[in-house]
Each structure stands twice: as structure tokens, then as C-alpha cells.
Amino acid sequence: MTTFPDTTETAAGPATAPAPAARPTERELERYRRELTGYCYRMLGSAFEAEDAVQDTMVRAWRSLDRFEGRSSLRSWLYRIATNVCLTMLSGAGRRARPMDLTEAQPTATATLGAPLPETAWIEPMPDARAMPSPDEHAETRESIRLAFIAALQHLAPRQRAVLILREVLSWRASEVAELLDTTVASVNSALQRARATLANTGLSETDPSEPLSDAHKALLTRYLDAFERYDMDALTALLAEDATLSMPPFDLWMRGPSDIADWMTGIGSECEGSRLVPTQANGCGAFGQYRADPAGGHLPWALQVIEISDGRITGINAFLDTARLFPLFGLPDHLPETQPTQETD
Image (cartoon, rainbow, N blue to C red):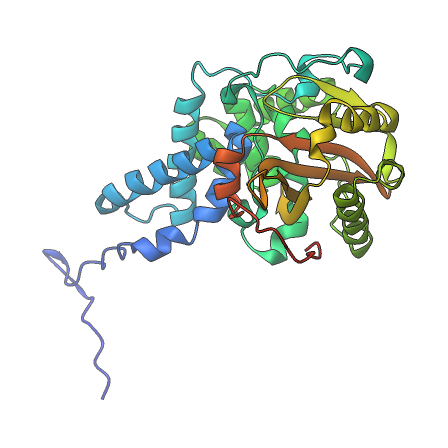
């Protein structure tokens, strides 16, 4: 016969005290690493700082598990820790940007690379595999992780940034955000209104459309790979929108339009001829690891290209040259052999 515990009250109080909340395991904490990485990336604009912030969050959470009483969900508790870590990291930090935020486009005839800016100056690319919680959520989250949106978020004060991400991207209720930030619902709503107004002034709102990586886009990326590896500028420029841009962080130089892009690639950038491209994905976009010919044989890392697409045309070629850090982050090899089979885009 089943025996139930005696919960009758006596003069001394309940006979049986409620069982304490089960202590979360390390495995349960790790379930949230990817979505926390995406959140911290939106806050910080740097894939490397985001991973550092999440690691710090996990360490703090693990050390504080004995004080986790289950009054809020484990997810909310981790987001609270991650938010505090990001706000601390952002204290006194400068605004990260894209080259297009810093200078005017330069015609190829007068373009010079100049001196590279430090890595802290730039919005950095993020591998989809490290920031997207699951393939099912990819379509919903990719828009808010694209480079232009991350750059727009940099115009917001840190707490406004947190409010907008939590409310508009992650769909938290105002009361939940208020509890996380130790503030009022009215304060959260006010911060959200100010954040929306600031984004509107940047020319990009959180509701700007972003196209999914459709079969047509994958075919366009395959054509780009083929044209770039053959270094066929006629075929490549046919894929570009009239206002397409080419940028090359850590340099603030950038150019606009198929003609200037082709002139750059066949002029100063002509050493890219003979490159090989390895497909990957970054910031909800198709991307490529670009390898230039190695005089000793094979190909060496040169750039991480993030390719932006709209209306069936390529609108942006973002070539990040910090391969020493980015290629390991994206799981790209540090050398390609002399012969490398052509790969289909994902």
C-alpha cells in the first residue's frame, strides 16, 4: 500500500518541511551556453568578448549554486548574471563600429589602406554555430545577429541595449526585464522607447526585414565562390547590387559600387587572384574562409568574408583580415593543400 508523508500541522508547526529546490547540475548550466553567447554578442559586438563573458557567467553561476533557491528560473538567473558581466565589461568601453560608420566610401583611384585600427574598434563576426540556440530557431534569431544590427546596437547605452535585446529580440515581458535589472516596469518601457528612437536615427530599426538563407541565396553564394576562385570580375560584379560595399577591417577603408570593387580587386587587391574559398556561416549570412596562394605550396588564410544579400544580389562583402583569431573560432583550417575539392555552400 502506498504511504504518503504526514503533513498534518502540530503545535510545533508542519510535521514535514518542504524539500529544498534541487541544485542545478553543470550539464543544466551548459544547456544555456549558446543562447547566452548570442545574447552577450549582441551586447558586446565581439565574438571573443562574448565567449569570455559567458565563461565568466558560468564560473560565477557554478560558484553560487548553493545560493540559487529556485525563486526564478535557472535561465532567468543566468541571464541576470550575464547581463551584469556585460554591463561591467561595457563600463568605459568605446563603441565598436563598421568601416561604413567611420569614414566615407573612397574611390579606388585614391584609395589607400592606411594604418590598421585596433581589434577593439570593430564589430566582429560571430559563427552561427556558436550563437544560434538551435536550427529550429535560426530563422527567428538570424535577423538580430546580422552585422548591421549589431553595429546599430552599439549606439545604445548599455542598459538600453539590454532592455531592447531582452524585450524585442528575446521576447521577455517588461516585468521580467524589470526584475532582472532591479528596476520598474515604467523604467523598462521608457528605456525601450528611447532605444527605439535611437535606432531609428541610425537608419536601422529592429524590425528591418532580413531575408532567410534560401535555396536561391545558396545558389548565389555558389556562383560567387566560382567567380571569385576564377577571379572573373565580369561574373562577380554581375552578382553585386549597385550600392554593394567592400570593407576590410582592421582598415577603415571601404568602397561602394561594382566598378570600384572590381577596380580594387584587379589593382591593389590583385594578389587575391588564385584564392580558394571554404564555405561557412556567420551572423546569419553565408560566409567564406578566403585562402591566398602560399609560395611554398597550397593556400594560407587571408580573410573571413561575410556576404550580405538582399533582393537576389550581394549587397556587402565584409572581409575580416584577423585570420589568426577568426579562423580557429570558425573551425577553419590553418592551411589548404595544393589541391582542394570544390565545396558546395551550406
